[in-house]
Image (cartoon, rainbow over all chains, first blue to last red; front, side, top):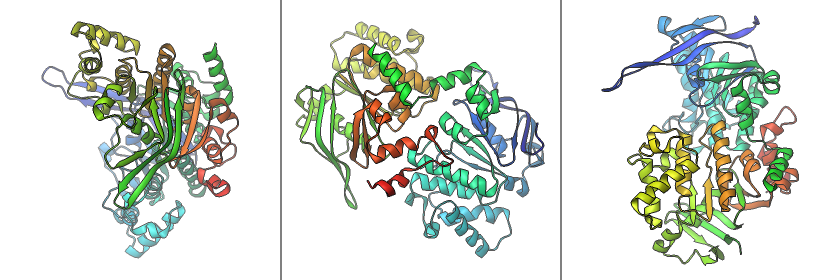
Length: 276
Length: 278
């Protein structure tokens, strides 16, 4: 695999203990079963799969929310195993995450300016004036206005809140950004704006994305490489062209067949079948 | 005579800042055996229109319409008691969140039988048989075993099947599905859409599909109404809508689909709004 990989994951496992009840024995559930992959600097890896396939568990391990049971994660040359070494400020600055629901991921009683400054306050020694300047510059960068600095999250639309969440995630100039279904709660036209923003930011800051999604049309638009997960295992992994044009695993084929086709030919075919 | 005919429907909500117009003079007609899709973004009033038909809007809403008829009967003058005889029997509705729409305290068998108890004269054992028949029709495996299951013991897709079974329990003439697959995975979405279209074709009922997903429109609709900010932007059959969209807003919606991306950037609706003006 390539040398310029910013993220190297080898043989990653995560097991959860399910506590027993009065009539049930305690058992174990393996959410991620031996996943290995590389992500190159400045590229986008899309992780696709249905609910319960382990894609969010993977995101939690990459962002150091959860520790892996076994296997290794290496971000920009730095090995990560929080159950043994804990988390340093250095590690926190390398990986950040944007969550699916922009209504749930912002504190309703925290002003936007403070939302953006908090990562700097916790992880750097910047003065208040420097933090404020950086927050204002960041607002502009994600397409918001300086006057939004003192406003509260409820005064924003869903798309604007997702911009704030993205701004917060890139405040520390991370190497790797994990995006957990960042556009699935948004309207189609707003989704297009956010996808454009993500592309611009990637070009400008050389960000690397791990993009988790179940929407194949978005994946096709954004991803360089695609990884399909099914019941905790990787069933398909390759470049976007290879996966979309020549899927090997049955699950990937099912997934493609289930995606609604919005082109004129498919509509014609459906109407013809219906008339017959 | 159309199954459902609505002319010049207006819905206003009283708010602290004065009246808010959610719908501003929109017409809807649905024939028996037809699939009408109402598509629009959040705030376009697509759900409000059908909630007005069902009488499910809160008291703060003021509903006016020139015509609002179901099978020739005026829906505007119905008392709540009369309306309840129509709703759930001749018109029924499926909502977006299947798990939230079911009562967690009762088994799904009980909840399915409840609809039958209210709207039909079937005896207890007959109802039980009909419940099993319905569960089989919507493709729930092992109906005899699942009939005594509680909603939390079933997956989201299974719960949506139960909701569909409940909606078709009394063989409605019109089924309104409000974003029936938005909370579901793609593979499950496909199954549910196929099921709805199959049931619609077998029974010849009218189906109104409310959605924001152009893919769902393409897969199910005969006719499409595009709404934006409480107004109708365009109405046409599904093929001409995708082949030759007339309104700028429809063009904007279609080009914002990632699969239609031509260049490096996706055009957004606001790009079109500046150029086209709507």
